[in-house]
Image (tube, rainbow, N blue to C red; front, side, top):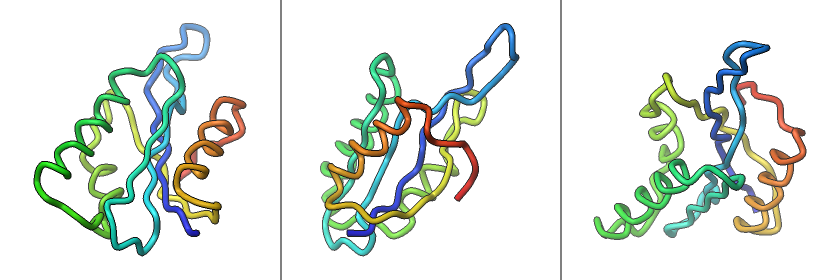
Length: 119
């Protein structure tokens, strides 16, 4: 299945290196899904960002949205407060399913295997 995703990165003040972007999570959707297929995953220690993803998912359910809009990720990318963080992407990859894709991407983030360039 094709998964489209954004890498959530926070602006960190590294005293030695100055300001840097640190990838901390992923937001992902199934391409072409006719459902509310939205998943997210975060490295431990990022409760504020995880809460934001929870809030977005809850708002969609409460609003009765049944299908993820095609521009869902791009909309949230453009609405992100760039003084605190940034979504990189979107990227597209094949995965067995959406939850597996999120787990694999967050594992790559944990290992430092993802570079931060726009997709």
